Image 1 (cartoon, rainbow, N blue to C red):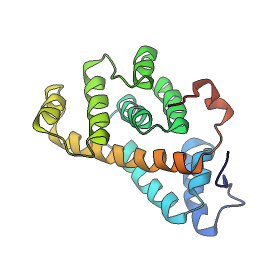
Image 2 (cartoon, rainbow, N blue to C red):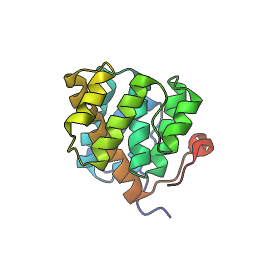
Image 3 (cartoon, one colour):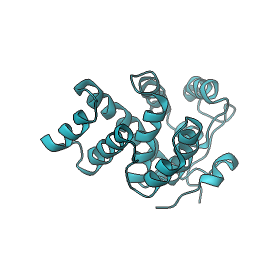
Image 4 (cartoon, rainbow, N blue to C red):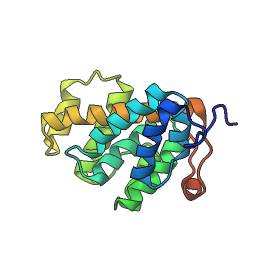
Length: 182
């Protein structure tokens, strides 16, 4: 059931249109979730700002997609799981690692596994990491600044995951092969 409209550039509130144009420039289209976000100009504009930090940060795209897919599964966001499955595979993530994350497990790759575990732990513990959680991440070869950068990615995914759960946008045809239910 679609509870919120999925806006286009023609139907969006005037103050959401510039953000939607930015989304369209980045993706080559306006994903249904962004169209739903456009109902709130504050939300869609905030999303654009944090999106730039996520994809312009220190992590590679496969690493970013690892965190985003893990978060989507942990938060039970069906739309985001489908999107980040597709984007993760496109970014070069191994299909077995993607399947593991979709099942709530961490990838077998040491660094991706550490990223996935940290992301899931941040959500499950509501940011209250203990020394062991931090040490496990650092032992995988990451630094403290990157741990803090993961918090930014988790924040961005929380925006999209919660928005997807609240607005329930339809899944685009291109994402339907990656459909997922919690």
